[in-house]
Length: 396
Image 1: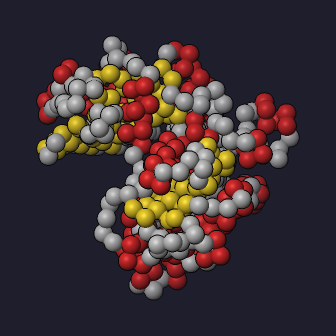
Image 2: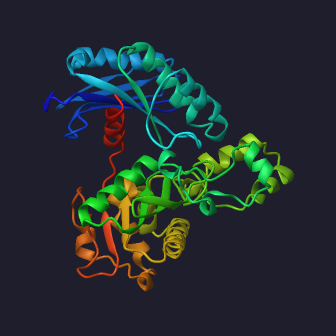
């Protein structure tokens, strides 16, 4: 351990996986990281990296408890020792925090009950997040555990952006509103843009483009709109999710096919988006098809970019203009063709991309618009784990 400021163990527990990092929140140094995959399947996989050494195991991982126990064993066997790492907190990513949480919170039994209560509006995420929390609290009982919510950054959305035009009583009784997601990433990236440009009055659009994708409008550091809604299904075209779609599609399929509601749910969340259009949810594979002359893949890219342009234009209208457009996450950070393709058609807003800057082989924070452009276009790598670590450390 370096720096002497203590470390934070960040845990992101999914339905069949656990991602983790041990970080120093001050410096951002990563001491160790790893992934537990295929929890509950016949064959599991665990990968733990400390320094330049990676240790792997391929054994069944029956549940999250077994997965985290394996992780703790690997810290002791392959390092660094958690007993000597000076852990000051464990930070847990939680997708849905509802209206109650607008920042990090120390986890106690009342918090776990609230996370469970909110599971109906995040059925794919909150139960898995909670499983990781419960096991980690049991295995690391002497360390403060902190929940950091994906929805917290969007807790203060203006009512005009958060409210659906749905019967008021139904919406209230069932907690239906726009909650957003990826908030930790949007908050981190918009904050970095503020620091890089030295302005606190920016009208920002942030595009978090990965397998899951979301857009946000941020004015003066506060979110004023976002593309994901009650769940992470709404908004942009994603790897496997439809994004925006007429709700009547659900009624149509249930009434006119033998599909159940559960099957339609699976269709919209797991078998649509780029995967549904091309057979692939990896954008690199989609581009390979495009380059090979595949017409379906070419159309899929146009659908993807069309949706992005609509949101950027809409958010410019919401904010009364746009000062910065920032790309982040896997596709946003690494796919120059998506970035340049989006800019085409947004020239009227002042959005331009410099070809050489856009195509430069760089993994860092960078401006890719030409000098003097009306809108500063940036690529800022997200670092949700560091953001979680810093928020967790602030409450220890």
